[in-house]
Length: 141
Figure 1 (cartoon, rainbow, N blue to C red):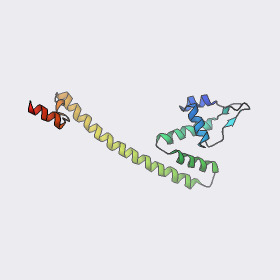
Figure 2 (spheres, rainbow, N blue to C red; figure 1 turned 45 degrees about the vertical axis):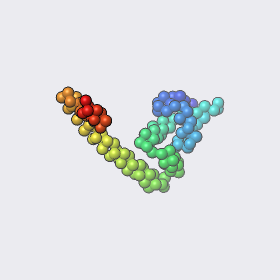
Figure 3 (cartoon, rainbow, N blue to C red; figure 1 turned 90 degrees about the vertical axis):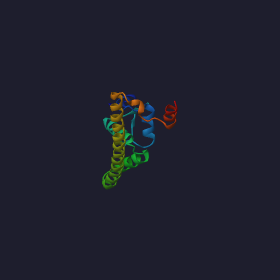
Figure 4 (cartoon, rainbow, N blue to C red; figure 1 turned 60 degrees about the horizontal axis):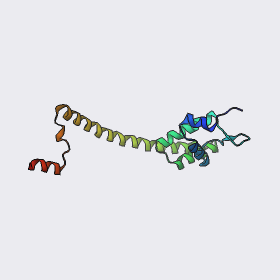
């Protein structure tokens, strides 16, 4: 019988064997993982695709409970697509807000890099962010 071993799936997804077992135990896989007669797990390409999607969900900050809920909805089959859509839209809004916040952070950092670069190039960087105690000490000398 064909299929992928847990080691092969770990290699392809970047998840550890321990993490794969965790995903299975937590009910985060859409399909039950088949087992050989000796008890070894046998994964499919669909499992790898599902895990890849779950990894992206986790990387984007989706809580395990939300991934589990989405998985449950998928397992239930047709008829709950509106619920799945609502769940995905909610997370999409969350990710967009994160991106907006990160863009604001990037703007501040980019501004600071520009200022520092100008001062380093001009040889005047020693005046940047002088603490009050440092400034008072230099004025006293």
